[in-house]
Image (cartoon, rainbow, N blue to C red; front, side, top):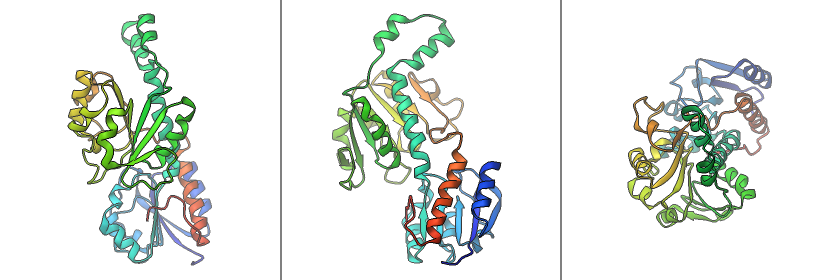
Length: 324
């Protein structure tokens, strides 16, 4: 491994995270792209990237495929849809390069966000807030009668990556029955995990359907009208995966008819959700603006995760959160 690396970065970083990145890469050559980007947006082609050994941020996928000197890509996101094509993987693997993501930065906040959704509705927190902001009424009888505890209910996790795994751990003390589906179960999952081909048989069993699926051709509208109709009446739906995985008009209809008790959405299609979109006013639809992965030290954590992996890269050790 060469002692001095050229590290390209287009991550949008506040001053404290930027200072830590510069300190942690002082033995290397750090190149910043002029137009930094958030971890949700891809950067464009770059002359600076063409000379890099390492990319930290969101490099242009097409350009990255053709750069023989680019040995390691570290994404500032857990999702990697734009880097998931067979042609991209083949190009990276063919030259012995590596790609990692930041799943272990975002699994905890996303899992806690989902848990907050679940507890909030069970304990009638949104409903009580609405009473305060729109009615100024003490709705004791109605809200107390509607309050629930989660014990013995069934949670179906769609996808079993880092976020779903962490949520499963957080749910253990609540005495829930947690099951999951994923494309190909590995056999080492800590909860009963089924192939996605069994999804239709599992949906009617679930009191909570939690979607953590990434965007891809195979997951596009996976939750279509037929599958939403299969979900147990009165169940709750949560989405921190991607909005494209859900037929949103069918979801809206299921909320309007009362088939679903509620929907908690941190992701939509498109984003931002247009002001006039009917989901804003659908009954018991609660929307947060793609903030499930956010927390106060998010950018510092992203930098520290990268720097920890950089040390492993320098020492030819296995990298954390390896995708390719």
